[in-house]
Length: 217
Image 1 (cartoon, helix red, strand yellow):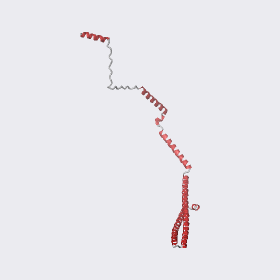
Image 2: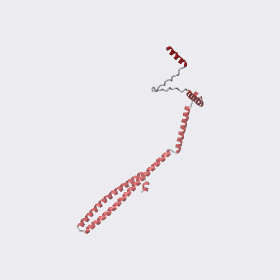
Image 3: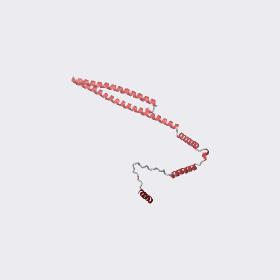
Image 4: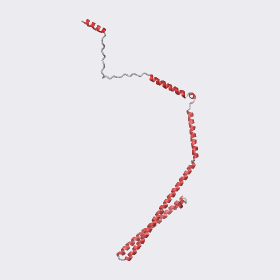
């Protein structure tokens, strides 16, 4: 069955699978209907056997039980048929799913191959070389635009840097030579004021004081 499905085109295989599933469903419905009919017949024969047994008609009761057993055998056989049909439907659905999966994988492989052919390794290398070349050209253009022109092009960068270092050193030296500003310390008002220590009077002052005392007398 798998080989038969895989050997056909996708549309034909799906159509055949669907038709087969429909046929199996119809057969399954038919078997279920027959099973119900036989169950009713078996139940009827059982009731007859009970009635014959009550009427003491042993032969008729046994005949009814035999027919009941025959119906039950047919019911069991129909049940086995239904199981086989269910198994066949499951296998067919699995085969259909497998076919669709393989077809999807085949389609994906074809698409992948087509994309690889559209972008092979040579094209990728060529594109990367063009990108690198354009990047290098743009870098050269930017370097050319940023290069000094006119009188500034004749200046030596090393000399300018050396002169800048001298200016920075002179500025640092001036900062070191600047006097440290004096900031008076504020003394709170509640501190006790220090009284001046009286100085000893000189000899002349002593004589003047004595003369003033005599004149006062």
